Length: 618
Image 1 (cartoon, rainbow, N blue to C red):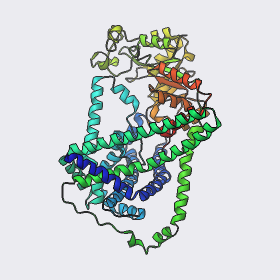
Image 2: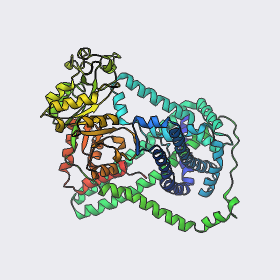
Image 3: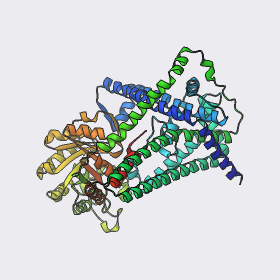
């Protein structure tokens, strides 16, 4: 009973104290997001471009990003980026925490006062504790979805291709579970370090220790509050969106989905939705910060000396302060106009700049890997049956130099052994049961040779051959080019790889081959890469990149999409090829889009709501 009473008290106080200074909080968020857009992000990009300019490259991709980061220059420049990011993140968290603490004590604040006092605290954050704040707000908060994140780093998630691979095995699922558990524990231990460093007169390392002390005293209650926060906010968002869409759908149907009245209503209703969406986006982070401050005050289990902050009246005779105060109304008006203008650019661009590629090609990832063992003859035959345009396969060489179709570095996922293809002869490889792990129906399925896959596929299905060089001087590129030419399939295959050098190498053996670089993550100008197409992980896909590649006469492929909303999103961005485990799903989405291009206002309504919630960031 006591716990329920305490919970109600925290929820009630969070709401009351959040509303107390909500105007100042919303004003600060508008200013801060513009500063992030025009200062912090460009500053980080400048540092990054300076770094790449010094080492003479246009981009850093895949494994090279880590390799460059471990060099002295790389560490120096990435260190600078981390410092800029920390300053940006800390200022936002500090100001919001300061306001929440003042609200808790029933004190009205001015944003100028909050900013000045927050900056004055920054020297106390010098130390290794910087990393903790960056991890909590920049990594753990966004990944766990609790609502604690910075406007600088709003969206962060584990790349889908990583989770897809991990969930294929029991050990992979266990790794994901352990990883999530560690994130939650670290979040619980460190989350209250932010209110501690702002409210108490302590250094960052002491604040972290204080947070851990509170956690140890009431870990289960704090966990319960975080779970409750996620549940409540999720339910409010889901129910609110459902009711809003239901009302809009009903009204548009009553008016007639192709009527002028429905057209007018839809745009007014969508505009209202966008305003609500922006307002919620502006208050989401401050609301969670206010919640953590209330939890901090409720469970602080030690004596603390709180900071004495400067009142804004201290600066009443300051010339700069008075000048800003004098033109406050004009400055606020200009900032609001710029903010609204920047806000409108994103949805207008997303809504009216769609390039729907009705002829987008479909590639069966490792063959039809939902219906047969991946990279097997059976999976390629299933891909043919499903009508896929391409089958993507992975190739590597055996110990005796034969090219076989296989993906993993070892056989652990296939037969439980730790043997590697590169250490096995073709004869040994052909004895591996490549199907039982998937289903008894495919017992004794062989690991195929590229030769037999090419022979079968000619005239039936095109191939996307991914090169996976696994040892030095294995001549994989030369052998693959020779096999493609043997079956005269230069026009029926494309070659891709995570290894950029391999693509340049195979071009030497056959300049007519179409090659594509697989991009899992990276920074810089990817259009400078000497390839015919980019194969992009979905989370890196941007409309601007698609435009730029198409302007150069090059294609963009995206992988690995098994979700209808992501597939639809990719098609609307104009991608040329979707790599998927579920060919039928892509075909269904394609046909649905093509049927609905004679669009009515109800379809427009659904589409615009989706664009705002999924693609427009405030």
